[in-house]
Length: 430
Image 1 (tube, rainbow, N blue to C red):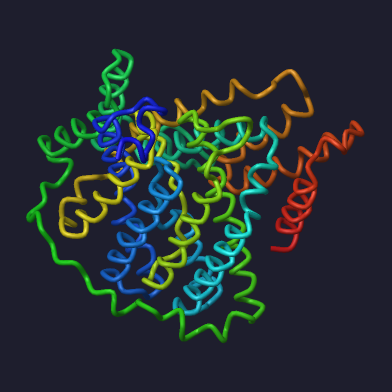
Image 2 (cartoon, rainbow, N blue to C red):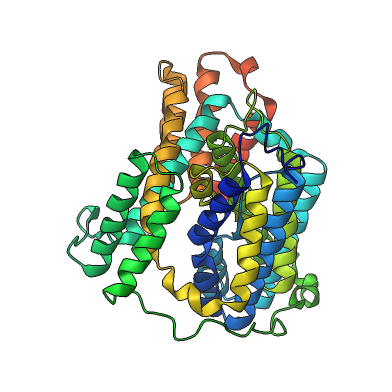
């Protein structure tokens, strides 16, 4: 096992990998609660979506761990589930069965692109400075999500965002958890992020802010309401409305996943010579989980940036992913316990992980203006638009333009020209 996952080469141990896997699972576990709630608003059966969410996470995470030896968790994507429900089903009036077929078709296309190594070539064509910017930008994005979940940052009509009520009990709990975790981290305590979440949960239950589960074991809901419905709507995929939906799923999921893989690989020290080893296998695992998820009954899956929480406590190999998958499997039977993993519990971890990921910004060449502007736009637009894909797209448009203006067109990979044009068309027409 140690030889298969290259423990010696990546300087890790079973203890580190196990702790990392549990930490990543706790950071991702909210998806088991949130995804069914969001997708049920489109008319889908909430229980079936819960089971589909867990099973797709188990399959995808296990595949990326074994095939690519990556310490990454895969599950239905937050953001894409909201797009599925509110934009496609409610906004466009498309039935969830048809929309799910769109997810299935997009995932099949992903598998084909992965098998022909097209996705791999695209990721390898991204300039190194932009890769560092993507990794750092995701750090700011993750931290912003944590600050929002904690109630530390709230919306404001006059200024868009402002500081929240820090005396609010739940926000105060998140702040306390953040301080405890930081103190343990700076003292060099291994697993500080994981222990911080556990301590925050215990404090929350003691003072009555987090409900103590009334039961421990729950029954696994049936998949019957959603399983296989995609196959009965394949004749609808050529409609203009659904083609636009498929393209959007392709665009957002592709670059959400690409951004997550770049950020996590960079943080874990896996990136060599501006390339990520086994990236093709990782992408194949990610796209395969999307197909499985659609058949089971959930929206598009993606590699989770929350995986960086596990990497921060020492996860370096696919054994971390095996532990994550095991945790998702156990969660199928112990669903009532998931209620204790609230946004306030995971928020401190996300803020701290965001700070650690933001360190990648220091590797960007800030002495060249043609690099600075695209990198800065990539970084700043991720949290401001609440979309990793949008930040990447804007940076990819600006970078070729900046080098073209200096007549350095030969330094730009042809794929970057194609991507810039596609992104521009996406913003204009879609």
